[in-house]
Length: 338
Image 1 (cartoon, one colour):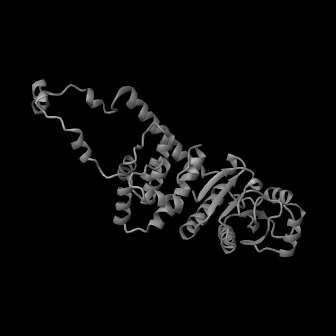
Image 2: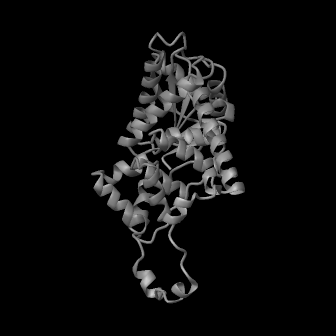
Image 3: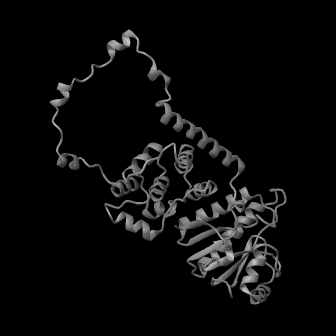
């Protein structure tokens, strides 16, 4: 998948470019900067000195030396003051500059830390929003593998408000699912004895004799009534919405190669994560999503945390797969895409 969240030490990543949360001056800061310089060796600092001062919101590229990468992109990010000094705009410029440098040097893969969320004091939720916005826009226009590398789960965090809303939604629907499984329908009226007038309006039950006269369909008849499969339905929806294939697979966080294999096989059965990602890319409502993924043999239930998170975002009209993947990661669920 073009965007992935990876829990790892960024110095261990095998990619074309590693982004360093660098000092604006040619010196080594603590944290990610120190770890990258230590792994790359002393020549990295010498190369950094040749670059000189880097304006906040900008970046510079050097060789990676002993790292498992071709390049290190040194991003100078702003220090958080109060959110009123253009900090978010400068941080976004830093991300955009890193991605532009990687593209200019024909990188196919790049690994980022969550920039500015450490020593520079950016609130993690805001730093994450800036990163998601930058990655989403870039991947809609370009082909590249982007990794957001976090050393621990605590390094990455949604806004507390969103986490609480999603957690509350999950809890409420788990209770509903438990009650449904334990007691049947939550509508108590199903246990109420019908009034006389209602009894008169109720249809008479079918007799065994009537049922025995019904002629069962042949197997061939059932097969002929087979509904359109996943791939056929997907292509029909793309055409109906007037979208380009590239728009859909990029929105869905699916590689071009994987999408091509999928649409060229009428009997393809994608993974559930891929099927849902495509439904989100098409911005289907809950009914439309269930219909599309059902053609690949999947369902959305109230007894799955993964399914409930997907339902939450669909019901709130939020379809950005990268944002949803952050939420899935927060709750230790599989990510969307392929």
